[in-house]
Amino acid sequence: MQSSVFKLNSKLRPLLTAFLLAVAFALIASGTALAREPVEITDDLGNEIQLEQSPERIVSLAPSITEMLYELGLGDRVIGVTSFCDYPPRMLEEVEEGEVTTIGTIVEPNIEQIVELDPDLVVAANINPVEDVERLQELGLVVAGFAPADLETTFSVMDRVGEMTGFQDEVQQVMDEMRTRLEQVEKLVAEQEEEPSIFYEIWNDPLQTAGANTFIDDVIKRAGAHNLGAEAGEGWPEFSLETLIMEDPEVYVSTPHSAEHVVSPEAIKERANFDALTAVQEGRVHMVDQDVLSRPGPRVIDGLIELTEAVHPHLSEELADI
Image (cartoon, rainbow, N blue to C red; front, side, top):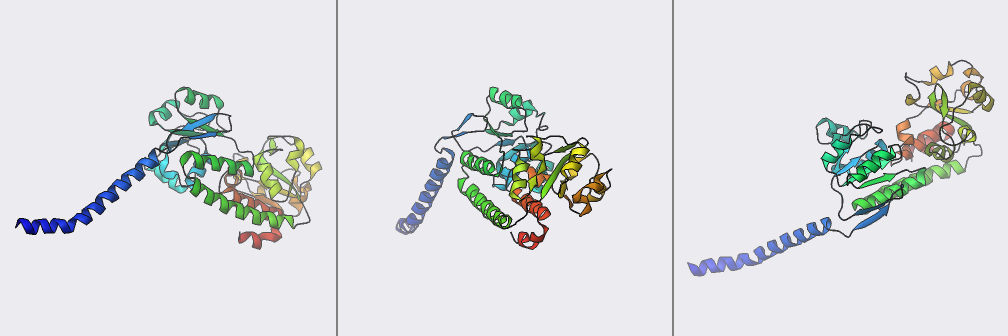
């Protein structure tokens, strides 16, 4: 009996050894993933962000950051978002189910609640008050602040997010796809002889637009249009009706967020004295999705395509294939 048992164990020994080796390698791999080489990046506030391990609990303080994290495959690590974060649908479901916590608004985040969540990384944007970022840092949290001013700096932010989280390969794949689509749009735009003038309405009363050196200004230029708002200065300058009529945009673009009530091309055309505008006379008043167009992240290419079609409607078929 002992002999037969010994023989049976001898047959099982190679399988047992292989199993133990597999377990050992899995444990080593797991330990390596957690105890990676320390990472250091510089955020857009000039802070040196040091991370000893890949962050597993991330709080986002802005809609653009939330979108970016989910699009880059980091949604499973997000534990907190603001009440203004409304995309992607998966995130909204996770908030509804209590898997992700709402931590206040963009301008009034609940500092105490964020600390209680015990995140190992908080990511802020330029729309968040600097004093809130500094307060979280004073409380011992790792906070990275980003302020992409155009598409190129958006790629830089994505690259640094990938480096911080250890998702470099995934981020690089997303960026490659974005750059391919961007190059296709820019190639079409470069072939156009005309550069129509455009007025991009941020708010209607008072009339406000996107000025020079803004994210939207960069997208407008890439769409092959001349941004009239850039001539009024940087930031978000106001326009009088008289100035608007004098500048006479060939294309007029607005968004659902530009007024307290629903905005539509028809409502814009019916505004007092707007019938003097070339854009109104030629039926070139358009609505675009401001969230897609103005939030730095992967979806901005969709926004660029939407705006390019408004500026160059004859390219609609080619743009639809991008």
